[in-house]
Image (cartoon, helix red, strand yellow):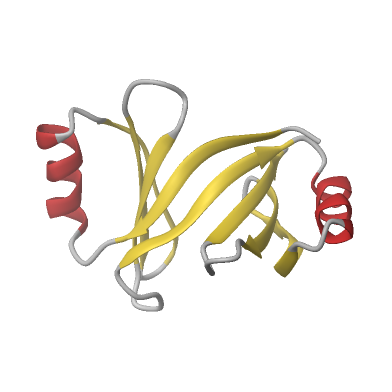
Length: 118
C-alpha cells in the first residue's frame, strides 16, 4: 500500500482574498480552478514540491481546514487494508469527477481523503 500526500483542503470565506494571500504572501500560483456545481468554487494553488493547497468556497462546510488529501493507486484495496488495521472509514469508496474517493478519520478527528485518479 503506497499513499502519497497531495493536498490540504481549506474551506474559505472569500475566494479572492484567499487566492491573493496564497499568491502574494506565500508565493503560490494558481494551478487550476473549477466550478463543479452552482455555489461551489475550487482553486488549486501550487507552491514548491508536489503537494497543493485546495481552496473551496461553498455554503455547506465550516471555514477552516477540511481534510488532507492523499493519492492511492488502488482505492478499494487500500480501504480494505486500512479497515483491517482498525481505520475508521467514514465515506466510500464513491465515484467523483476525477476517479474515486473515500474518507477516513485519524484519532484526532482529522479527515483524510483517499483518492484514486482515473
